[in-house]
Image (tube, rainbow, N blue to C red):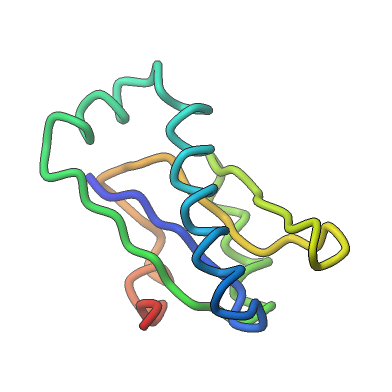
Length: 100
């Protein structure tokens, strides 16, 4: 089980760190009663935080079961997506670069 958090590459580093923290908590709170989250919490509790361009960000929304994070300091722009933990991911997710 893994939770993916996608951060737009255009987001400044400091705001990206805040967005990742908010995204993780928001996804947990949204999906905390699901069996997937229970399994995730009992398992290795994996997360992948990736930096993506605008096109990949928009396309990833099709995977569903997600929370969209906005940033007031950037005019309430969408800056991050956090997805409910799951075993199987769309192929594109495996190729998103990790945030470094």
